[in-house]
Image (cartoon, rainbow, N blue to C red; front, side, top):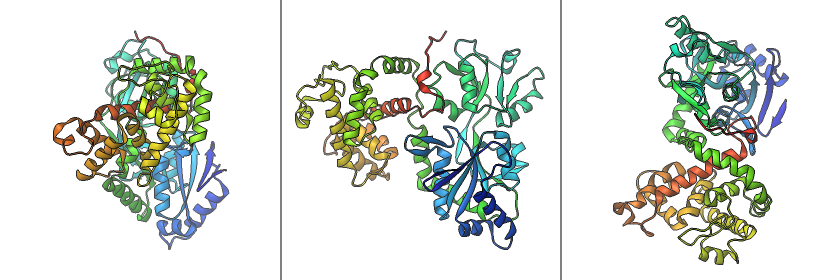
Length: 472
């Protein structure tokens, strides 16, 4: 068992591979039928959940455990004053049975609520909606209907909602054929289509969103379903205590707005995919970034900023061109204005080392000016907006957010009011007046996308291996 702070994980490759601690916890729970399941968890201080290793559920990021499911589970475990013990399954087919058989307290693995699954488990309050989509490669002919995919190499994950859907659709289209893979996950299936090993697969819309920039030639042929709910799967039992507690927890997250904040954190910056921009970014990453990477690393270490975030800022500002100039007077990789450069002690904005160090120092100052009341990751997004539009205008947008019933310290709310600074009815009452607030929102969104690509957090697969081809 690999131990992470406040989190135990067990890689599961066979049904009997439960950790001793987890097995003991569940065994004690089974023996003590007089105490509710919820109380048993509080007494043992251990919540045991099975999940999957993927970008949409749980993965090891640069800063430790991450993923939407992990974020939700950690909060739920904390609400119970329990330690989260994750069993990471590599086989989707065993996840639902593990929950149904009581081998875990419940399953949280990006599970779509389906009729077949409801026969085995009971689902919590949903926390997200996704759509099942037919995926193809742009170099192939786009299928317009299920009748167009006969004789194509088509595969989905065994035991998935995709396989269940196809079995139901086969009743309507007897010529529909496909293969089911037991040793791949959803992201690997996308990779196989991109590498032309498959012609088609099915992916949930959230998985494709997280992976579009790794596989820019992938396209959606059409939606196969209406939006469907994702939820946690619990064993069917007369004891409702844990099930009801989880439902209330999810409802409270929705009511408080915290659920929307989490969804925005993972998906809010990924909705507008640009094939051309992604293509050029990856070419420039290979051709231009290596020359400047040591300077980003050194400046990041000096000011306590992830160097890849600094590099993402530099790309948004200048596409990593040290001699970049704009008609408005900003210069260099980090596009510093002359007054800002002078205040930072930068003598030559066209010197890449001075520009990168100056940009890092300036960004650090902006975070320092905001940090008293703002926490991460909102602090970073607000500081990025300030780098673009100015700290004063960000503070105006914060005030507007508060006046409109939002939270001035949440990027989710401030990004709604920044564009209002372009409208006279709003900016006329602010301290700093007009600002191109919509541009600031796009600026932050772009940097978040570049940052994610540099870190390779869209997928466990290596982003550095991406090759681009012109779409036919």
